[in-house]
Length: 627
Ligand code: COA
Ligand code: AMP
Image 1 (cartoon, helix red, strand yellow):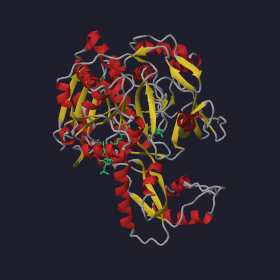
Image 2 (cartoon, protein in one colour):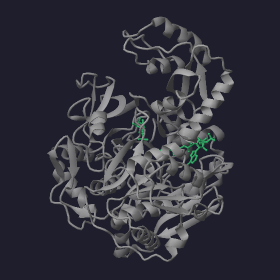
Image 3 (cartoon, helix red, strand yellow):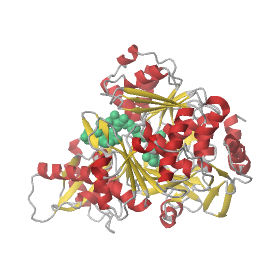
Image 4 (cartoon, protein in one colour):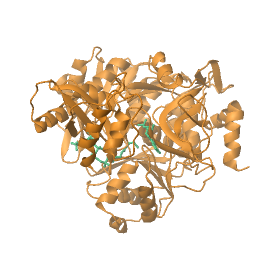
């Protein structure tokens, strides 16, 4: 039996043994004697009798082992043309002092702290400082507007909020402080402490708002020691898009998270203490949590944090420059980023300017890796291009080609095989398991492995309803696909109203909710249509109120501006089409999937439940010629 097959089989038949062995990679205050607690199934907990501190595992223990002088974090900003490196000893010092700042403001175990920061080292420092004192961080992506930040503040009820004067996007600065001020005004619960990291490039400072200045506080702070927490205590909440307008607060624990991420660094990515690892994402997404901050530091590797874009900062050689300058061994990015580079530099001519020989592997996730992009990246870089599939909820790979355990032949279009711990199945609408190559809902038999979501923040009912109730005994991933005859999983896309734009997960429901507030709009539907660069993009279809006469361009620019103000630039909402009516089922459900198929020029079948086939025919006539 191959090592993958053996490990996979053991992870299912001897869960406790498998994960207790993996737990040996973590330094515990109280080591676990049991792995799985299934006493409240289908709600599971991992390592119920263990205690630890995550920041100790990410920092202190490497320093204690004599590796304090190794580089922990390299920050490279193409936006300000600066680089900074932190050794493990230096990062520990920064984290302990900022933890002291938070503790000095009364932030303690279990308290929530919102982190709204751009890609600067302080983002990682703030996260690890929260972990150090047992506080629960919730990072909000900088591309979200004030109302989205306010929604997260209301749900998490933070005692503190950590921000910066702003972020830098090509050609413009994003001033964070007015956004934070507006969010605080909009929210029902205001955090009592707001700390601002001043960036000289962006106007605005803590003093303008009567808030606290990061640098001033950190300079005089006493370092805080680690607080011991239960393995089952929450480390963070990360909000992600669901099918409704209200984001889901995915809760991650401390113990299972540390065990799973350490296991994944070695077995999925083949990365250890001597390696330089770079995840080109943002700390605001799960990819940034797991693989910019926690994963690489847990195994003592060097992690690169990049503030910039794949193209335009300043050119399509930006990624190759970073690989060369920091001797990166493995890069993890979203396929969109590769497509963006290819679009600007189709023959990768920029590569000739750099030495990228340190690179062993290119990992891709966040959206489907299309075969074209896969082949192109493999050809120009000459290294394996490895797709893997996972989601905010799981926090680490569900399906992957396990480079450290047993690299397998790569098939374009498939992220390869289920990772140990994930018993992946494909079921039909009734929950019956489908045979090889039959397309259906991708589910995972419960329990999910360690490191996956412990639930949704203070909303067990929604957790059960969203993930556990569709097919009892299984976790619903929300993706559809199939497993081929060799056991390779193919992920075809979401089966719900979640869309994926440039590797960013968005809810069409939340965009619809904003579009529907326009006084001219009677009804609307937002669907994710195919986009060559970004994978998908939201496209809005609106029915005007009777008697309304509005210029379509005016309507479009008003809707685009409103979505930007309410959700943020990240929504990338630009397309608006006025239609006579929306196709619906007899029970009133809008046929979004059929609309998407029409716009994408795909074959579609007219659902038998349709209310009025003539509406669909008219829409097909109007929309199909657009392509
Ligand atoms: N703060 C504020 N605004 C932000 C932002 C941030 N952190 N990130 C993106 N935005 C803005 C962009 O400036 C853009 O604004 P615009 O409409 O005024 O141009 C808008 O949000 C859309 O951003 P995006 O979809 O990212 O497009 P882009 O043109 O800026 O960049 C790519 C395109 C492909 C280069 C970029 O999407 C990319 O690198 N994607 C990789 C995806 C990724 O890291 N995913 C994480 C999961 S792995
Ligand atoms: P997020 O929670 O933002 O990480 O988004 C998760 C969703 O992105 C998944 O449910 C998939 O729809 C999609 N996704 C992520 N990685 C992949 C991949 N490798 N292949 C196909 N889809 C992916």
